[in-house]
Length: 436
Image 1 (cartoon, rainbow, N blue to C red):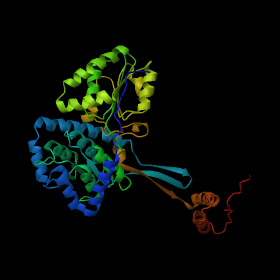
Image 2: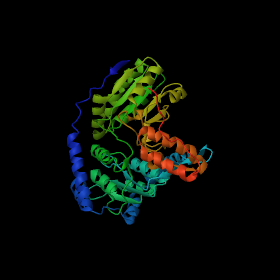
Image 3: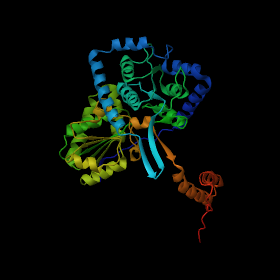
Image 4: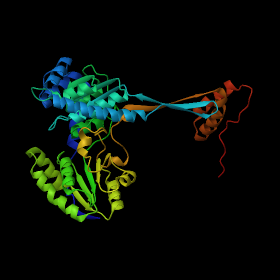
């Protein structure tokens, strides 16, 4: 491998201050309840209006959204719903007779309450509302709450409210940040306590979810978004460059990679990217410039296998292949949050409208987990039932293994069944002797 551009990341920020701040806010809301949450919303979100968005406000917000944008949101919602429904169809109950008279099975049970966090800082994350709420709805979650930071004097932007309402949010809170997460986790403002919290957010939201994990479930520990493009000599350099810039604009801390087997393509992309960044609006430009300068890497590899090895080692959140023989790449690649095959698709499609969820593992977590799906909102639980005849060999083996382990109480719960079900028989239930 040859690095034609190497990342030069700044020294990592000290997370201790973030953690201390988040712990303090969570503790104050846990003890102070709704009053404390309102106070933080007034202080941090500059919002003193209604916390719970009324049905009248939902309707008024819908009236403010242009018809074309409504149609676009419905288009995205339909695609995401269809994909989630297809996922749900793969998760089924089952039962099997393990041995004569012993039946065991699994059931799929959705959690009772979900809390969906929708970011609302620099960008209005309409797509995040669709991704999280729709997926919970398809999973069958009975109660779905959603929150998003209100804007001073306005509340949650109308397009986000419209998307939340369309996708099935039962309650919408004008509340962002740690206080929004805490309100859903603690069951404030008439909500049931959330069983799971999902959705992207800034470092304070991510830290709040990390601290609350255990009290509630979460989708994943999320860091800054990241994206990799794999490209060979068949790729269009202008398209590759545009895709890298599109992902770099997420933020100064969002790494992007180009992994290629073609030096000419790499050189062309290195030339194009700064020029494309320069044409962005100022806020986007600053973020993309910082991400490209400090975190981007361009890696020249010796063929497809080495390119695939690099991708598997990085385990990017988004992995876009713009190379020949897409079926080979689909079968070979093993570590990514979501895979995009061919120039006809792009990560931006997945971020907004195409169907698969955009809440994905970051920072290499794709080595061991996938993204948000209906499965995250469901529990796979097991059950078993036995006849008395089937209980006999189970009890005998259980008693002997338990005594070998020194767990006499376990052994006796097996003994008592043998004594009741087979009173006329004698069993050797001693721990087995192991020589040596």
